[in-house]
Image 1 (cartoon, rainbow, N blue to C red):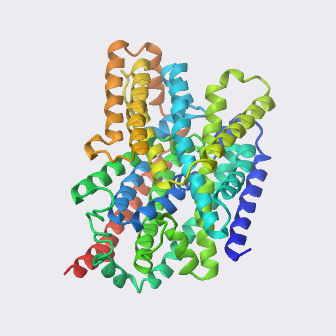
Image 2: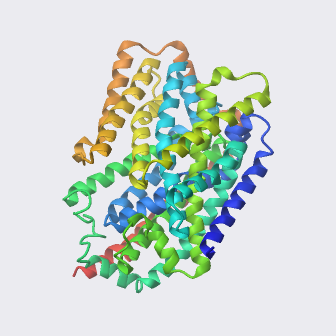
Image 3: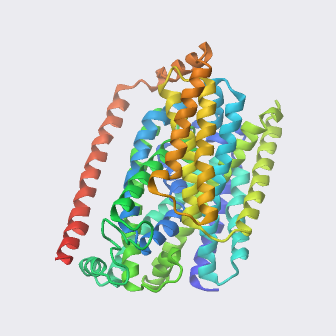
Length: 533
């Protein structure tokens, strides 16, 4: 048993132990689903980032960078992070006011519709299962690389690593373990990159070498490697901007992000957490993307691009730092998988099986745990019989949720005239408009033209559904009453001192953005232009 494996096993034991201890404090379904609505900012920030930066970022995104798509992924990463701030202020704090346990329950309550609640739950489970599958595959890929064990054996180990505490503790355990895991991979990313830079011969040498690369031309140019996705820089740039917007929408409305706001102790926690989460995501992903590009400079012959960061941790870093990095990657995967399992299980029991609820608190809790356990077994089977496609499975789930939920979610808060029929058709057509061409593209191996990207089709169909739905049936008095209630700020939230503190944090965010721009000019743009002469 090597040192890397010992470190990974130790981390898994800690996560399971902490999760089980948290589970002992779960008294009812309110604790199980939304952590009693008392979570402080540190736990919300930790969970927002950890549930988003899965192995899809550590292995999938970095694999794309290693393959020659550096600037495309950087653009997506920066744009998507802005979704936190927009999402908290345009959607997150309003659904918290609805005092629901799940986001599908919010849709059902907002429009007084059981069928919309059911539809949103089904689309949630479809998209989140895909995302959870990518997280499980990432964890298993990591374990296979470290141990040499068969991939399917690692799938079972990965499944056990998060299922035990998630099924038992629900949202309380997930929030705490997410935050611990976030701290681990944040430290790992920031400490690990200097060793990768050193291995590449220094920052300036690495940028110069990559800019002049003949084995993978354009690997860090704005156009990216033209042999990888699209044959022109313009198309690649459009793809990056489109998917940056897609993922900003995902961050704004996706259940694995917005459900965290349902657990926050107040609306100030929602808004402040979003700002810190946005800065945290950009910091970690920027470090990861440069690391992956530098690893290509050091070793351009890694067969499986998604393992480039794993190779860097095991070959470029001191043993203890390498263990920390691998533990960080594992933590990212486990935290996301636990969040996704919690979401799927909660939606199944709270929204689809809601008729089975009784007045017996312990019985309801038991049903919730059984439902979540059943879901975990189904996902295990899917992971067991599917080969790893970490990046594209992740993007599949994200695109589907953005297309089906994006328009309806935002209009549910900002349109008084939106009817139940409009919301239902908007979500249904948005889902079908994206999922069908996305599935066709994946199964046939076809790369659709950028203007026929499934996201565009899904959003267009969602808008058409909303327009047709509003023509068929207008919003009723109850729909309008629910809309108006969302815009009534609770008296407990009205505090001038806290308002000023929240507003001042935006100045910190602005300063961060300016510093980020300076960083890219000084450490990327200028060295790149000098290298290209």
